[in-house]
Length: 111
Image (cartoon, rainbow, N blue to C red; front, side):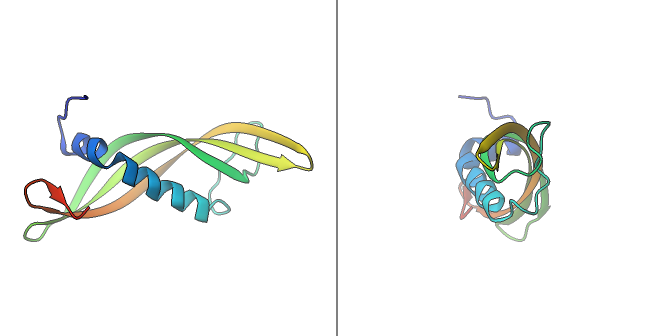
């Protein structure tokens, strides 16, 4: 298990799957709005999120036991473009800000 040295490490360790799911849903819903391309793929029509790199956590607000924060994530993606019958694949990366909230009560609850 990775040593937890910061609030960001705790978020990554406990909520990696939830943040990955949120990013995957956003990418799927907004593929046409994202500028995903590589040397071989000019206009991605399929995207697979391959890996997340948590860069930092910005705590923005907290009232009572509540906390609001943004997680800044660099996302590595495998992108595919189909032109006629040919499929080209490549890699792209994109940065995302995932806004989160929870309750600090015996740990982070209601994430």
